[in-house]
Length: 122
Image 1 (tube, rainbow, N blue to C red):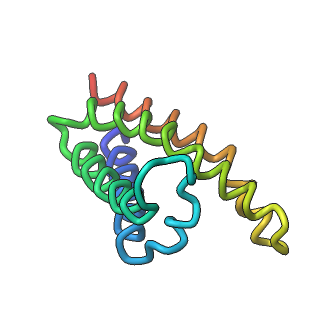
Image 2: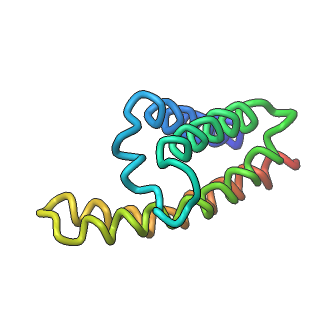
């Protein structure tokens, strides 16, 4: 079961990384303007990080470290979710609710990555 959970997490990360590359505009829009550089550069960097994390989590030899880094990554991208919820506060339903619903989802993702890391240590 732990290996399956790790594969699912790696799949989630790989899918997210691919969508960042294939459909960057929605991701560009949620990059906080306080960050230096272009939003597209942050979107592409995020895609590269997600793909690298997916590979690290998928491989048993790097799973523990990859999953720990994934937990940190999920925390680091939380401000983009906050920005999206703020920016979408005047949109019609279901968009507004979807943006708000993303906020609490980050916590289970962090916990999932930490659990994968703990299980990899065994």
